[in-house]
Image (cartoon, rainbow, N blue to C red; front, side):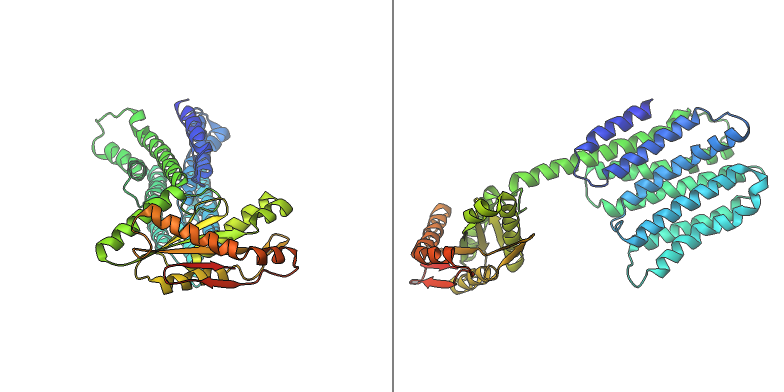
Length: 435
């Protein structure tokens, strides 16, 4: 009941999570619930007892492999799905053979060998197309598991127990390794989850060792289940940490385009000006306003308008340097911060290159859209030394460029072809570009 309630709590947190694998995690916890539910009938005799014992062990390994697969960074690769399927199949078959008893003992060796041969075959067959350190770590782990199983599974007294414990230890050690690869961050959620999985795997080593070397020691059975709760808490922390990061991102980024919003833009512009002031260099601000955007919204709908903004934002972000910033600061307005090395001539070239992206028609679903733009450019410290003054100068030049070509825009609006490109330049420091 406690595990079932914990799974419900996990489901509640996972429902609104931004971690795409939270559904796979939830399936893993449902397998843990199945494991405990089946354990209620552990003392059933006969054929039903064999089925129950298989279900108890198999559900625990299924949960581990679901957790493991969810943490694989390349899980969308076909070979990763093949590997996951092989693990599930071999684990289930091996547990079935192990629990069936002496009549199926002849199959133990070939099935145990599959723990090594299965993943190794997939890794070698796909090595030309894909390779990753985590994959080879997993392959090595399962080769060692196969060697261990072949060594202990036929022991007359405790072979079955040792083999099963070794299998479960390898599964949850694999979970710890996979989460270590997937969550390389110094957070409480990552640490608790990785440590929890490692402790969980060590339970299957510590239990038999205590029984063998310290038989008089008594440990309550629930102590061995504590790592499960630790892992559950760690996963919930991971979900909450990710949600917090997502909320922080939403607070500083435009929801539609994913670009920095006006708040983050102001912060980065302030930092760029301070750096330029300290080094005695220049910084440039470009304000870009789309033309005919309202016409696109009115004639094709807001959905196409949103697609247009996403396309333009992505195109602009891909054209500038990583050290520069492209942000969406208004409905159809984008702003670009260019940091050193930069001067007015370079800023003009960047503005022209951004407008060149809009020269050709844009395909949005079944619609072909022509859209123009106007750019205003201001340079720190030539045009202004304060943020507000720099923004005002760029806005003013953008509107000058837009209004100076209003008559041309009206002609373009009635024409069947794309808008005409035109560059309008004034004296140094007073530049407006219109497309």
